[in-house]
Image 1 (cartoon, helix red, strand yellow):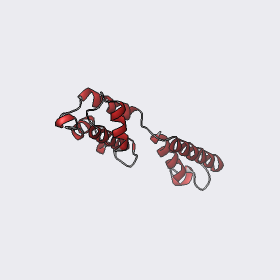
Image 2 (cartoon, helix red, strand yellow; image 1 turned 90 degrees about the vertical axis):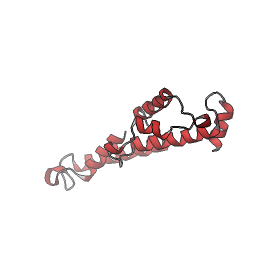
Image 3 (cartoon, helix red, strand yellow; image 1 turned 180 degrees about the vertical axis):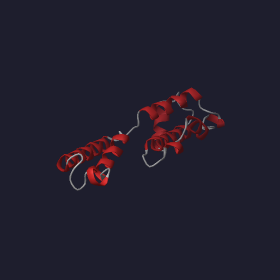
Image 4 (cartoon, rainbow, N blue to C red; image 1 turned 135 degrees about the vertical axis):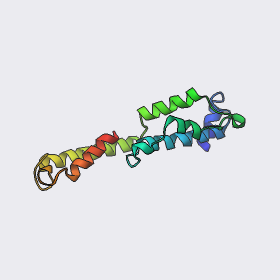
Length: 133
């Protein structure tokens, strides 16, 4: 709430009230999570229509924010998820560890390799990581 209040004070022409900024900020965080969380199946992810519907009536006196404004937010978040530098560093370290383990056990050999048991757990972790990026 404090972010929304401060933002609205510093940018009075962007949103009519701090409530609008607060609701939209929360909605954007939920959109980012929904579009980029690997636990959410593709068919269950938020669409542009559902994002527009979720933000209906959040403007001044229950009005809608401009559709092209909301559609632009949706497109940018879908294209480029936001994340913390700490999260990026942790993902890179995990990828390096996975890569290192694959090199130790061989890409298709060893007890964990795909040669005997199909896709190894390490390979699945690596694939999941690469999909997240």
